[in-house]
Structures are given as C-alpha cells and as structure tokens.
Amino acid sequence: MVELEYSGTLKVVDRIRRMSQEGVEIVNFAGGALDDTPLVVKEATKKAIDEGLGSDLTESSGLFELRELIAEKLESEEGVQFDPRSQIIVTVGAKNAILVAIQATVKRGEEVLIIDPFWPSYKPLVSLAGGMPKLVPMRKGKGFEVEPKHILRAITPKTKMILLNTPHNPTGRVFTKGEIEAICDIAKKHNLVVLSDESYKKLIYTDKRHYSTASFPGMKERTIVVYAFSKAYTMYGWRVGFAAANEEIIRKMVMIQSNSVSCPTSFAQRGAVAALRNGERGVRQTVKRYRKLRDITVEQLNEVDGISCEAPEAGFWVFPDVSEIAEPSDPLVEYLLEEGKIATTPGSAFGNTGSGHLRIIYRHEEKYLREGLGKLKAIIRTYANRRG
Image (tube, rainbow, N blue to C red):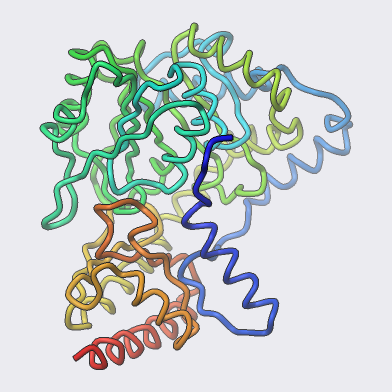
C-alpha cells in the first residue's frame, strides 16, 4: 500500500467540524461557501432524478450531451477543438480526472513535476497512480513566478509529466502567456505530457487572460486539460469534472473509469449540462462579489506590520506572506485556531515554497468577513508582540 498524506486542506476542515460539533464557534477562513448552487442546476438535477435517470448508468465517458457542450465551450473559449466522441471524458470531479489521467499516462516509477506551491492533493494523487512526485519551486519575490530553469534542472530520463495549475491555487496567479509558452517549449523538447488543471479559469478578476496549455502550437496532442464544475458553479457535492486529451489517453482513461466507478453520477451530469447552458450570468455575478471581498481582505491584511498580501488575480483566497511574524507559518496558524478560534491553512500544506505564508478564504458574507478579519488582525498582533 502506498503511503499517502491526508489532504492538507481537508485536515484543517475536518478539525473545524470536530470543534464545531463540540460547540466551539469558529471563524472559518479555511473554508466556507458564499453562494448556493445555481437554481437552474438544482432544478435540472431534480428533474433528472424524477425522470428516472438515477436508476441507470450513462456511458463510462459520460453523457454525450454533456461532452458535446464541453467541446463547444473549449472551442469557443480556448480555441481548441476536441472530439466529444473520443477526446473528452466526464469524471467524478477534478481529483478523479487527475488520478485517472496520471494512471493512463505515467508508468510506475516515472516522475511527475509539480509546480510548488501546489494544491495539496497533487502529490498524493501522483503517488497513488504509481508515479514519483517531484517538486519544482516557483520564484518568490513580489508574488510567485514560474522559473523555466528550475523545471529544466528537475528533468531526468524518468520524467514523464509536468502538472500545471493556472489560475493557480494557492497563490491566485494567472500564469502569463510567456510562462506557459516556456513550459510548452520544455515539454516539446523533452517529450513530456502536460496535465493542465484549469478549474479556476472562470474566476478571474482582472483583465488577465487565461491561456489553455492545449491552445499552444504542438501542444494539443501532449496536453490533458482538466476542469471541475465545483468552483465556478458551487457544485462541490455534485462531484463532476472532465478531462480533454488525445484519443489514446482518453481511451485509457475511459477503460480505467469503466472498471473503477463505472461512470460519473448520472443525474449530477444533468446538473452540469444546465451549468454550461445557463450558468454564465451567475458566474459573472459571483466574480463581481468575490472581487469586492478580495479587495477588503487585501486592504485589511496589509494594515498589519509584518504581513505582505498581494491581490490575487483569480480564485477566492489570499496567500499572504507572514514570514516576518512566523516562518514557517504553522505555529501562527495553530495559535489563531486555539487562542482566537480562527481557522486558516498553513502555507506548508501547499508545499515547501509556501512555508512562510498562510491561505485565507474570503468567500463569506461581507459582515462576517470584516468581523473575522478584525479579530484575526488583533490575534496576529498579539502573537507578534509575544514573540518580541
């Protein structure tokens, strides 16, 4: 059995649940949801259940209607054509898409390069699929940047894949065209596959453009695009995502999925259809609300001596640098929870490069957010003064 680490983010969430069950009131900046799932998605899902869709399976690759819509979106938004019959698979969320994609492309013992900091599940998913995770640090400074020389330095004859995530969790960065082009050039030169997790592409606040790795010359055949419906459409419990890639990779992924989960939940896929058809207006409204909450959070945190908080370009969190107060940030995170009953996530949960940071989710009602941030600032100042 492969030795796996428990999800760094879910570990914090589980602890919050236990404390809440014991009657402790927590300010939850490690999680939280501002919006409910769109009504059109819920209604479509209920209708599918009422019509008996839950009593049967769909194709292992997912509802063809949904795959067609995904193909249309990828062409209109990213300029990349994928055949819905053979180059798209609907999955049980993005996590399962990533796991099955690695299983389908990476042989046991081959290396997968992970840009660090990273979403905590990447490393265990690589291990679970039989690959060898290898961290590649981003350049720290004013924000984080991808360093091509670090990627090149990490490549060995065993390297098979680069795992890329843009918009990026946890930094909130939207990688530039130049950064992605550099990764593409490396992938082509060294015959690597790029797994491109683009789950946050609809939650961009600025005029920065999202570039799909598959859209660059010579990259469609060596890129696996992954997406989750949970982020933009608040469909976390639906567990629906997808992957798009060349026919050989998708064929292997379908084979694995047919023998593991059979297919994604049938009626949840109807909800995803409704999200793609009718959910865009709601997404735009969500982004507008998140932008305001982001600005409040960044302004408040930068009022604390020793904290530097860059405004994220996407997502629903900030990743402030607290290294002047706590390096690593783990003791501060523990102090915030025990003394202030404020839950955050330590930067170490996201890799070595995130050590002096912590992640704060601001996806809350404005009143709750302002009150929580006020409390958080006071507790951090107390912690900093006690350390002297």
